[in-house]
Length: 261
Image 1 (cartoon, helix red, strand yellow):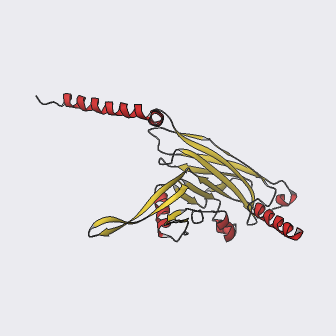
Image 2 (cartoon, one colour; image 1 turned 180 degrees about the vertical axis):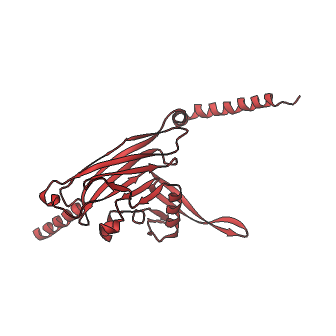
Image 3 (tube, helix red, strand yellow; image 1 turned 30 degrees about the vertical axis):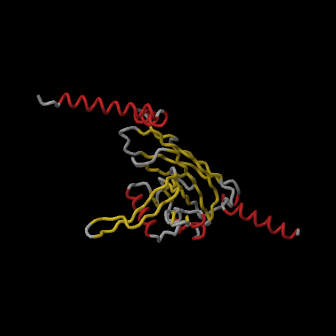
């Protein structure tokens, strides 16, 4: 009985430490701003992440391989339907569809170099490093899962997101200013969703994660657009009545101005 308990305890400890940094490097990172304001003329922006890696042990100070970083930015989750169209008798028709459930509205993966050059395939898969490894669950009949990067719907979904600059992967997106100081620019397009964005920073050395930290920022609406959105959400009946009255007044005014005598 004691042997079984000891085995279970060791297994649990292995699971708890599997994704944890294996060294004592201390990672300090900060964002240039934690809030982005969106107005009617918003055309996109960028946020700078910069930080430093501080070796805390003699072994880490003697490290000669240098550091590599993976910065992952994840936007608010959303559920979307992707449809496959085919031409039938000269008419484009929806032939099949898939629902992507709780997938990021925005996803950026920024690295110092291709991840294959500084870590193992197992680590890439387990920690979802890159667009091919990130989980994008689909509703396929009664099942929910990710068929993998070779799936046609997944490939086209990622392609469309990339065309709108909502999914991106940049292998030289993180710059090492010194052996321990880094920075990266996170580009946000005009179509970026309103909400909270999570920023995950991982440091690799000797093909393993040695430090990790996280931060966040938010995109909010301001000005008249935010006033209208709040009114529609919080005072739905009054908002609908005001919109109907405005439509009636506008129609009446147009009939008076363009009346033919």
